[in-house]
Image (cartoon, rainbow, N blue to C red; front, side):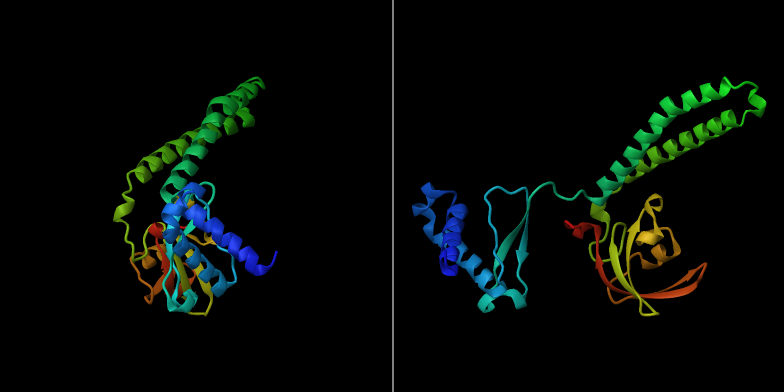
Length: 245
């Protein structure tokens, strides 16, 4: 099939999909034609095939930038994701902690009692290293579970709507340039989720506190254990801007 023939077939399918099927085609041909024309214009401009589907799970409006507008016209499209939408950061944190609580709870109620019982069978508990290690682990697990449960309650109470939409806050991803010229991406997270090797910075850390409420273009100086560091915030995505990876 020729390229023009393929385009015409795609155009016809788009009209059908846009108006709800072959039966509805005569009644809504004008709207379907307009939709198909828009899709053809985008293909001709970008060289890409824009797929359409009547069954969507999640849709987000997208307006093409000036560079992508065919013949200078602004076209509104719908970006379609198939499958499950991304879980918001608040829900991801709660799930992460609840999963850890479930794992630790099993260790506390199933595995550690068996270890303690085996250690008891070894004899004198005063000099029984296995017994004391198991009991110490039991105390640590109990403390960790209690702390995680408290954190889950605190996170559940967070009102995400009150987090700024135009400044750095909890959940924001920040693109910064250090005074050395190095470009770094940070994400502001809870202390329990922090991992500097992955760019996950606690909001209570020196760098995290310095970047809170900052806007693109702002510069900050941070006194850290390793010395003073200076960053310029180039770009940020807040917790409200989360998108599929």
